[in-house]
Amino acid sequence: MIRKTLKVVLYLVLSILILILCLVTAWWINSPGEADPIIDKSAKIISGSISTIDTLQIGGLKQYIIIRGVDSTKPVMLFVHGGPGGPEIGMMKETNRLIENDFVMVYWEQRGAGKSYSPDVLPESMNLDQFILDAGELSQYLTKRFKKDKIYIMGHSWGSLLGILTANKYPELFHAYFGVGQIGDQYEGELVSFEWVKKQAQLQNDIAGINDLANLNFPKHSDNYADLDEFNAAWDGYIGIERNYVMKFGGGAMREVRGILPLVKMIFLTHEYTIEEKLNYLKGSDFSAKYLWKEVIDTNLFNEIDSIQVPVYILQGLYDYQTPYPVAKDFFDQLKAPEKKFFAFEKSAHSPNFEEVEKFNSIVRELARE
Image (cartoon, rainbow, N blue to C red):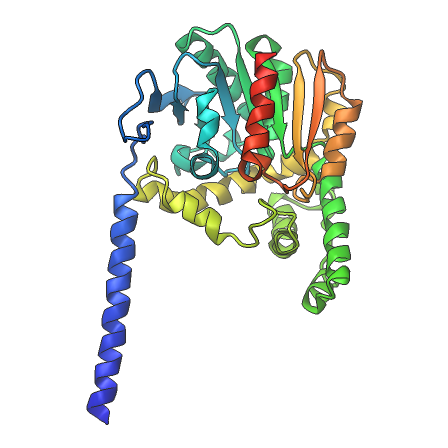
């Protein structure tokens, strides 16, 4: 009997070791830190395509951009990722490579995030004003590199705050601004989100959710806290619980994705990252949020921008309760622009660029043609 038990234990241990070895091998194979070529159906590199990882000095700091496009002469789109500290190259490659047919997509790994994360990044440089300067400097570089008078800029989530402020500061650089999961006033947005999840918990008779949310204290404005650490502690404790229910009830990153594992898998499979960079991804996310979340909460775009000199197009998921739809629509309604249009995505939450790809790309393509 003892020998039989030992054999079973040894079999289980061996199976676990083999599984770990397979996972490590798969991780290593999928982590060359190199740009994937853009290929056709016969696996041949498409002539005239572009797929590179560039290292630049932006704002006195080494930062990375990943450039992908089927045709290198197409219009250039600077994609400003969310987070703060959440680069989206892995998610875009997994869900929406088709946008590369219409644009040269430039995925900027922002200061302190993704491939641009480094322990040498100075905390005092992690502020919204510096990021706007970085985005302006990068946009000027892209106009020169691709010999364009202007480029497009698209911001998602946190990137929508940074993106529209950049377009407002440097209107001469941009044909238009595209906002996805648009921030207007994130503090107000968090209040809307909190009321929504409490209502959903009641409607779905989620007893655990009802109790968790009833015991959750909504954080105050930043001037009510002694320092940044106290502010972050209050928000970390709140977000850690509230966002779980936003995702559970279909208002998170994607309406049909109710957990973080699919998103983690997309990062895991990103060839543009080395193993070290994948391990640093979470460090960069935590580092960025620590120093930037206060500005996300404190910045009210209703007060910052009442008019802008470039066309503005907002693409918003109807079920978005990370940057809630009602707040984005109110911000859009009060904004003055040479041209503006608002598009609702009725099957999407926070990421219509991942969720309703065909509709999303068709709208962006047609607007660019106009």
